[in-house]
Image (cartoon, rainbow, N blue to C red):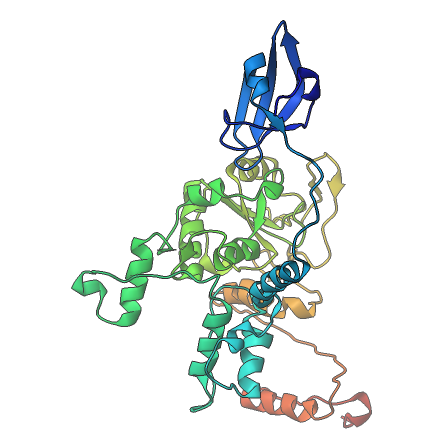
Length: 397
């Protein structure tokens, strides 16, 4: 059982009554007259022991573990062990594992709803709706079975009577008590959780901010849209956050900071941004790059960009009519994705204007000829004169 000091090298595994487990030698041992100093780490617990001194008496009680393992095991038992391990992991690769451990025989539409739609969607929340008797309970059960590893048990426990008037209110109250659901957040919470990739630009699209709450990255909000609108409006007014809009994050159309904000300007899309205070301050001091401005009735002039270059007025920007100082006019084309936003951000602000006149010209190539009748019916329902006609169908005047 005795070993010589020269046999102990780096990576050697030694055994002995001095140690509770086999120990592997780390690094090159150092020695002196009649002793050896080694660094050891346990092969099972990874416990590290530094500077262990081994004397001649210690070496006499140690042995070296054989590195080569004898292949003398029973092959059939070894195969059975591997098969048992494989079977124990089978559910990890079974896409219908929830079905395998259920006591029901789902119909095809139920399997399609759970495995092709619910489970493939973002883990946020689901609305499961179907005809009466279609088996929604079975679908919900399959979803719970298939998602058992990702679901969290919530124990309702004792709640105040005012919080437990219904099962829904009790669940919401317990989620709030356990800090899993909030009614509102502060601007500092948004700033603390600002994505590292957006730190330098300091601009976070509102669509991404809202998605972060819905996807579970942040504390879930009970009414996310309303809570975020309230927080952002208050933060922009107080100057703890800024707000900007524009197609280009480097060239905003408008910036709000330390001023009231209309909630209609808060659209959770990728063209509206919440800004860090330092970015909003810089934009306000320098003037938002390329923003079309109205200067007390004066014709629009090119505005300086951040780098000192001159940016000409962009096509379709607001201009003052030189003959009528108080009349604003605009002419331009709208892309398909701008139709609703134009109504929300522009037309709604003309509701209180005097003598507002809007002229519309529409030219389109529908894919379906039946759309023409639908369009004309829409004009009729709105009480608008005229009809949609193709050039060859126009009646002579």
